[in-house]
Length: 164
Image (cartoon, helix red, strand yellow):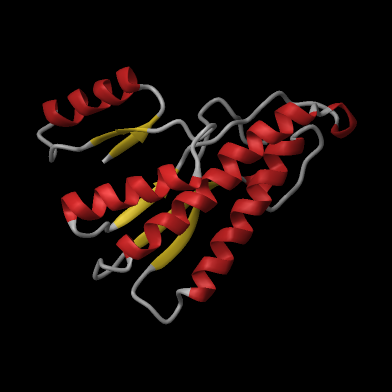
């Protein structure tokens, strides 16, 4: 399944998957900035109705915002980043858990960042959101430790960053 806010980009990814001989993915347009809890519940019910279960989810949506001093972070920017990077992933995971529990070996993977466990100057709201992501992942991993569902976070690399 491909989920995102831009149908054109979803269709491009769909075409790439099909051209590579992959399994046909479903396209689910959803804007995490404005989605409600009910939108996620409806999405989960649609997935369950069409597929019966969900084997895994990669929580990869995220907003970075503008790097700035802590005391210069605008409230609207803070709210937008927290909405997409934390609240939307929280609500989506809550809605999808019953469908993932139907899988023999479900997986929930969050995308994190080094600034999610090592705060750095200027990374402000993004760093705060990734600390929250790490905490959410740890709580879920502990709560689901006696099940077949595994919960992890990955730190995606940005090829434009250079190691020091």
